[in-house]
Each structure stands twice: as C-alpha cells, then as structure tokens.
Length: 508
Image 1: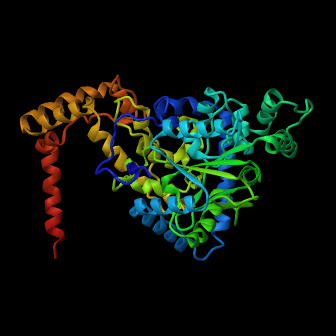
Image 2: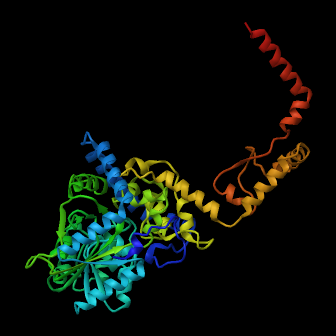
Image 3: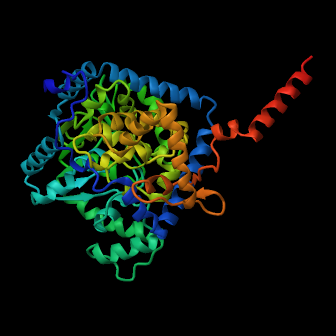
C-alpha cells in the first residue's frame, strides 16, 4: 500500500500536480456570459432540472424520517473521513483476500497509466465504459485515445456526449443540454450502421443506441467502471444505474477495472441501507435504482475473472487536511444541488469548465485541484458562481453546507491572492477617515460625482475599473449636502431643537 494515502499533510499542499480534467479553461464569469446567450440550452436545462426537482420533492416527501436519513448519511461520511487511513487499509485487505488487485494512484497521470497498462495486458484496443465521474475527472478517455485505445461509453447520455464530440454538462444527466432533435442528428452523423430514416422519438433513439452497443457488449473483453460505494468491511463495490448497461459491463467482460476516489468508502455493508435510500431519491427522483450492482473480488466461472481496483487520490488527501473544506468530500454525486441552483439552471454545466459543475463543483474542484497556483487560475472564480441562496444545502442528502464552504473558499482566495486595486482603495479610505479634516475634504470632493447621476439620482455606469461595481448594481449619486453641513445649517439646528422640544413634551 502507498504510504502517501496515510501520511496526511497538516495543510493542503498546493504545488502543481496532474489533475486531469479538473482545471477550467476560462473564468466562470466569461464562460457564463457566453452560455447565457444560448437560449436553446437554457430551455433544455430549465425544463430538465424542473422535472427532476419536482420528482425528488415528491419521493422525499413520502418518507417521515427523511431528515433523520440525511443526518445518518452525514454522520457516516464524517466517520469515514475521520478514520480514512484505517478504512483504506481494511478495504485493500478485503479486496485482495477475495481475488482482486488493488492499485494506488496519487494523481490523474498515475491513474491513467495504470488503467492503460491493464487494458493493454488484455490484448484489446477497445474498452467498454460505465458512466464514471472519477474517470472523467482524470481525463481517462482522452488518454486512452492518445494511446490507441477506444473507450466506448455505454450510458446513453454519455454516449450522446461522446458521439457529439461534446462535454458533459450535468453529473447525473450528462446530455441535459441536448434535445431529442439534436440527439437524432448526432446519431445519424456519428453512429455506424444507424437507420438513415431514424426519427427523434425517444424510444427509437434508445433502440438505435441499444443495437449499436449490443455488439460491443458481446465481444469486448475489458470494461472500466467507477464505483458509487466501496465497503471497507467486505471489499464490496457497488454501482447504481438506470439502464442496465452497467450490469452488462460488470458481468460480461473477462477483465474489470474500477477507478474509485478514496472518499467513496463506507465502513460496513449495513451502511448501504442508508445510502441506497438517499441516492436514488436525490438523484433521479426514484424510490430505488432500477439496477444496483454489487461485486466482491472474483468468483470462479461467474463474471469477470480478473478484477483491478484503482484507488484515486488526485487532491483528496489535500482536501482532507483542510478542516473546513473536507466536508466537500462527503458528496455522493447525486446532483440534487444542481437541480435547485438558480445559477446552474441559467448557465448549464459547461460554464464551470470542470468535470464537476454546479454548486458542488464550485467547492469540490478548487478543493481537489487548488486555486492559488496562478493569479488568473479559472478555478479561483468558481466559489463566486453562487448567489448563496442556500437551496443546495437544503437539497443535499448528506447535508453538505455548500454555502459556508463557498464563503470559506472566497475567504481563502482573497487572503492568498496578490494585492489588487481593492486593497489600494481600502488604504485610501482608511487614510481619509483617520482625520476629520481629510474626511470633510473627501466628502466635498465626492460631490463632483453628481454629474454622473441620472434623473433618478442614481449612477448606473462608471469608467474602468469602477465599472466592475456598476456592472451589477447602481450607485446612489452623492447628496448635495453632507450630514455635517446640514447639522451646522440653520435648517438642521431648527429641526434638532424641535425634536428635542417634542421629546421633552412627550416625556411622562
């Protein structure tokens, strides 16, 4: 076992490291501005998130102990992080004892090299894929392609994204930004052997994908999966899904390779009882997942005869060392926070520029990849991609306090970022306010700003760099008279004397 995963640092290390697809391409504000102009995307995302949101509220409302379940899930995840080194050793021993092979990957580069080597050892130039956020995080598909290995996504939404040369925009529904007419066009253009008369009926689109994938399932000798949960007690892994493609990948190939983030552990098999109630209700709005697959090592003559588990760090131990930020590692990837977020609903997932979009992505990506190596790092803008309305916390099945984490990450960014114009403004304000004479002079000088005010007495546009303020809010025009000037005037003295007389007259 690699000791890197047990010798947890005292503070998050922020040296450059290979993080795969975690790093954004441009700051969120610029990307969001572009996405807001895509009206079709906004319609697609808005309709889908509202549908999932309503289904979730219906099925969670059926349970009288829903809040107790949330508390139980949060307690289990907190327990896991409190003794993660111990549970990782127990998990490794249990997997190994049941015929599996455990590999440890410190970052995306190591994980990709391990998986590539394992696929090559099977002699195949193709690998089936079960939908996996961990493999997206490390950019596994792109790495395999660069090595001459085709990774075939078998989840319908992931297949749509892959064939469309696109990027996922949602944790649960990667193609949420596509409508069925767009999907039909993608299938006709990219899917080998598709019926040229294929229409956009959802049932027909699903049947076309099923026909395309069936031949892959029957002949491909190796599959790659993630894991929703890993049970330290027994060495069992679990994948939950809705289409049956995962069940095919987990049972038919000779070799199975699973990539799992080290935070996905739960201590005991009995803990699944909590999470198999929380996850489907929070993700798809269902009482239970149509397919819940579990496997423990290797069984002679039944299922894959070779099983490899890649345990992935990729910034998780750094996040674990942050006493506040570690709460982001509680995430069970349900996407409930995305479906209630007003920012995500309007911008979609691509604006976040990372594997993990939405509120959880705004806290998880900076935690895993860091946001301080460069002053222009796009990840540094993610904690600001929120209105802090708190809807994400109310929806989270394991009670991650995402708004508080966002505020903490903003604080860290401000504290560690190089000095900017704001610091100079604050210094000038401090100098002016430390002297009555200077403060009076500054107030009189500020009256010049009245020329910028409109008929309504508000300033709606200022020149750079002050336009950053008026770009999102109006500024009241300075008053004609300062309070000090009013106080010293005859009008002010008369008003004050009258108020004093009324006060004395009303006293009993």
